[in-house]
Length: 226
Ligand code: ADP
Ligand code: MG
Image 1 (cartoon, rainbow, N blue to C red):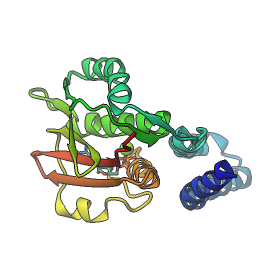
Image 2 (spheres, rainbow, N blue to C red):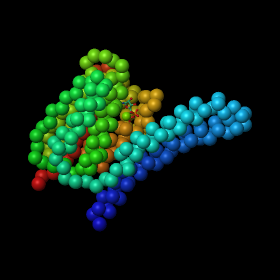
Image 3 (tube, rainbow, N blue to C red):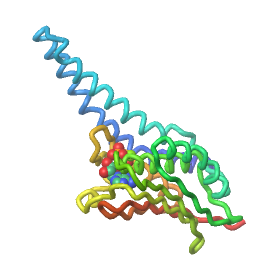
Image 4 (tube, rainbow, N blue to C red):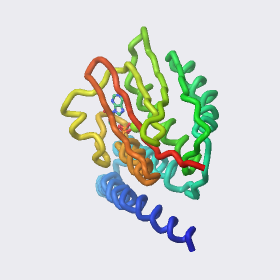
């Protein structure tokens, strides 16, 4: 019964975003339909293929981004936060190396646990890394990505910091709204999903950012005594 109950809550958390995703898929879908009709009317198929393909790709990205978090089984378990963070080191290092980013991680030791779905926490961290890498753009020097953890008031706090391009006020104000993106091929699903998922774990999600200086995401997850 307890499992059913948490499952219900988890579905609620995702269904809000799912409704948005469905809504968002309608736009490219209606463009595709319209362009097919145009092609049919004018018999000029070639002319419309690029747009149709671009819209199909866009749908694909939206669906992939959404599924990456929502299709996971969402059972939670008591886990060592140290263990979860350490298991991310190799993949994050590799990603950073690939994108010419200096990676560092400073973990606060703790024997306490957090009650989480490990794969969702990893997905959130990888999502944040992806945003940071995208925020470095093509700038060449001094690209750093840092993870630092603290323990405060019975919470495990994770700071995820980059010195990428940061966000101007206009962007910060909009942040967290589903589908808000400043990227040509962005989906605007990453941050809202991360926020929802962390809140769903009883935690909180905060972003601090200064334009041209960098961005810090602060995740807070309750620690469990045992
Ligand atoms: P997407 O990455 O698909 O655009 P997100 O929800 O992940 O969607 O992010 C929304 C927007 O927030 C991005 O388009 C970008 O403008 C801004 N953003 C997110 N993370 C960062 C970051 N680390 N540095 C600068 N801007 C960021
Ligand atoms: Mg993103």
